[in-house]
Length: 124
Image (cartoon, rainbow, N blue to C red; front, side, top):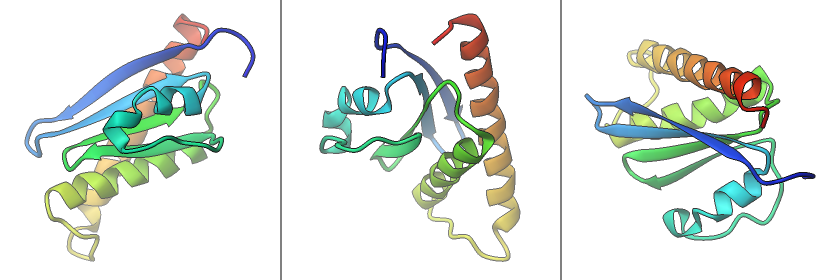
């Protein structure tokens, strides 16, 4: 991408589950992901409009561009929810789907609001 590399970070904590989700709004997903390659065990070679990466059982990262669509945000947020639920040994079933749905909505809203704040305030 053209211009200077920029990224902004927000962390969502889930204290009950002891889970931490890092939201990274960046103008270069590959560069943002690769500067953390030690956390993830390797480099990202391709390009992506959004990306979810896990660093361990209780920490995940969503990387999105400033103009990410709701579709991209919800897609990467689902990966985050799946990782969060795996961390607490909870599978998606008819008995747990409400927990998944609530968590997905919560994360999508947090990511969407942070992305818009950064886009408006920081001009990434």
